[in-house]
Amino acid sequence: MRVLVIGKGGREHAIAQKISESKMLESLWIAPGNPGMSKAGLKCASVEKTPDILAFCKINRVDLVILGPEAAILSDLKEVLEQNDIACLAPSREAGHLEASKYFCKEILQDAGLLTAAFKLANSVSEAESFIAQHDFKNPIVVKADGLAQGKGVVVCENAASAKAAINDLSKAYGFPILVEECLMGRELSAFALCDGEDFVVLGTACDYKRITSDPFSANTGGMGAFSPCDFISKEDDAAIDNIFKKSLKSLKQKGKPFVGFLFAGLMKTDKGLYVLEFNVRLGDPETQALLPRIKSDFLDLSVKAVQGRLQKQKTEFHDFRSVHVVAVSAGYPGNAMDLGHTIEVPAKTADGTRIYFAGVSAKNESLVNTGGRVLGVTALAKTRDEARTLAYQEMRKVQFQGLYFREDIAQ
Ligand code: AMP
Ligand code: GLY
Image (cartoon, rainbow, N blue to C red; front, side, top):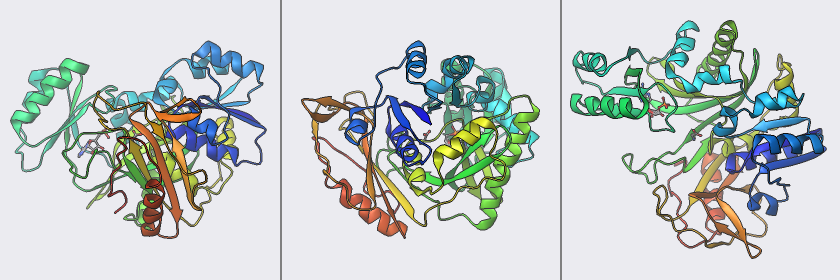
């Protein structure tokens, strides 16, 4: 098979690396990729716009295109490729609504009879404020924009004043409707599935670290690290995760929006069970870098079966390893004034059980330099999480560039 992966981050590096292990693979490219991926032996294609990607696929007789980032999934790329008989692993625009509208997501969850936070839908400031007036604030309340907000559309509010401010800010930035939601208490985790419209295989669970430091009130980032699997979930929770994917896919299909692609469930484990916070219609970054190295099954085979609607009776096999992924970022991240352009030193050969996935890097005079916030990440695999964490940090300490920063407490 001839495969093209779209994207340029650590997630896409991990996807391409996993695909490259397939016995079914003839050729693989990443578009646009990054020079770190090229150094790691993968082929990058410098095409980014839909017509250029289409032309590349035709010239190179690409059989399957896998979309990584949200922007590619939201674009016209899948439609255009499929009009030209090129298979594309990504959800349709209609199914993508699951992430693009929190209200639609709630409808699917309620329809499927799954646990999710109780909510009310407000179409004006006064309506939203009337819901706040009914709340006693023994627990916080959550105010959410309905549409896509690049991670900035959710505010957990401890009192009426902050809830009113959130209603004001979110409605100004993203309009109505707004959701006012019960605040769930528990531990967060993510679960991932590869779906064919009806059937699915679970790709595993992961926990990520969103804040720049261990202080829960420090700045939000794209993700500073992750580990997989989550070790605080029981066999019953695993069964509940299967049920969440199964029933959501059924409900989506019944609504005429069958879901093909990667489904990412944001979950909260509470005293009353596993609640769904949200769905994303893609793989997570950096969760993917922790998730995929654990997979033993032929990932290309599963991907082909997903686009062909043939995942029924398939199961993912896993290596008997735990994984820990630590992200290195540029000084100044996640602010705007980042310290960029410094030469990156990485070990010529990574230690056994570890690998490096590249993200915000460019090439300069044969070297790699940091040109983005999240620069690279180290994944380590070992029998226990403690061993994997030790190994990941040992390898990370061999990486150098001016201003390099990473969190010291991933997977602790
Ligand atoms: P979402 O985009 O819906 O996943 O929300 C982003 C983050 O807000 C989640 O990862 C949670 O940390 C938090 N959050 C969202 N909804 C709730 C809720 N109902 N209760 C508690 N925390 C929530
Ligand atoms: N790590 C969270 C995300 O990819 O959205």
